[in-house]
Image (tube, rainbow, N blue to C red):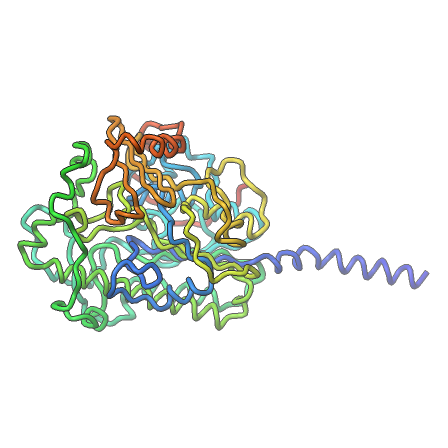
Length: 477
């Protein structure tokens, strides 16, 4: 009898500790978002003077997706698609307003952090994860510092441009204490969270603001490359002559100076220098966070995902900013490191940021969701060379879509006009091949991937934009 009682007591003890044991085995998640970072990082080779040693080390350790693309070439819809798991053509969130949590059709959509919280994770965020400093009400358990568009201690460095660009368009080195820069503050907060002991698995999302405009970095970093040694992006005279007329209005970045202003003012090199400096500065903050993880007890049980919300132009195609369906606006750095995976090899398959949500669900063993439109990338983490029948889609405004395969980019606009580029022979997208009848089969094949649903542009419930103060979240499955 005593032996039977002892056995039942032992089994009871196992049952008591079993839930916490299984939760402890679940991997943590560290999500690192970077704003406006194009392929100007060392591991992607987008600019010869780009330096990003910490991002590069993560790429060597994990899987670097060299052909990764955003779902929209502008902040709000890109970040909405990542965090809500649906395409802009489904949500109707095409531009920087409205916020998705103010849209009636999005009220029942469960965000990525909410799904993790509903399945036993404690969630944290700092910096820019959604557009601006906004957060859906109660989306995270704990909310750290978040950026405004501009620090009050920043000093304007370049006089206002002559063609009406907004105040955000400024660039150069700021001389105040480095510990006061917003991205440094956000990194420090994330480091503190990561270094603690946690009773639950954690989901930490930290978003770095630079290299978003204004291109401000500490003077120390800005001075690392002399202005007169800066190499400018390659451009082609008359590059836009073979483009459909719709691109003139659709890709006009109303808040940015014209390319002619940069050339005529003699500030093109200085602006490129400032962007490169911001990349180096942000890479330093990424390195601080990754070092905190390496020094923590969680280093061997934490999935790390690093991505940028979209790319950026710095004179290519004679334009600045991002809003377009061309390669330099849609292609982004995207790295996944997952414990237990045989990684360290790049993957050239076309992939989407929309895959972050379903990939994390599968890697962490969470319940699947049938309302997500992305595809899990776990097969490519196991074998980066695996056959991949999918393309990467980007949408900019209703019924304007781009499909990217391993070799081509096909763009079709709402008026039916087209662009087609062979990225193998024309990586700068200088020659629009859409009128070449011999390539009709390529266009037809890529067009099959375009969304069947093209929602009208979303309107928020109250008829105006709303921001949340990031209050605590109520768990919902």
